[in-house]
Picture 1 (spheres, helix red, strand yellow):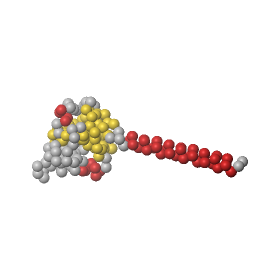
Picture 2 (cartoon, one colour):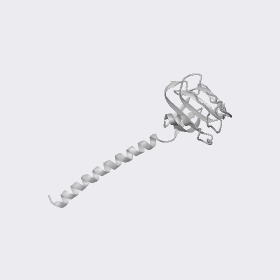
Picture 3 (cartoon, rainbow, N blue to C red):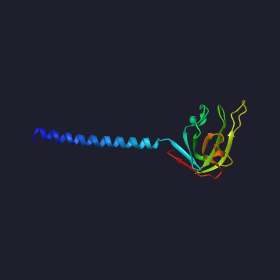
Picture 4 (cartoon, rainbow, N blue to C red):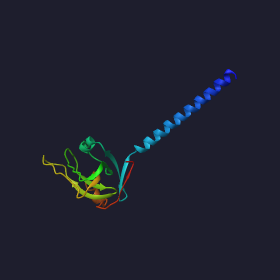
Length: 157
């Protein structure tokens, strides 16, 4: 075997190995991008693009640092276990509807939770346990006919 044949065979192996590695990296990247796509919540054929509050800090801040939401935007709070999660409007600059969800059903709706006018903050609680809470602009639950028992579909959570 001459040097050129040996060199060619070794470089083909290297090229094939490099191709496999690049393919795997691209595939993993596409899977990660697909999983981190925008989270959507659909209720009664109305879709909301939401930011997901998962960490304790994100849940504490909520929408309080948000100046406004577009009509079909919101925030989704995700909890590990169903419970009676309380919410308040501390630091909020606009009213919202608070929609409590358990599994794939709406269980409680707090319509038009108002911006606080003093230090006495109202604490909002559901009538039953929930494992997710969706906050959207005030009035949308009524406008979109969202009621207790409405089916909720979540994509890219």
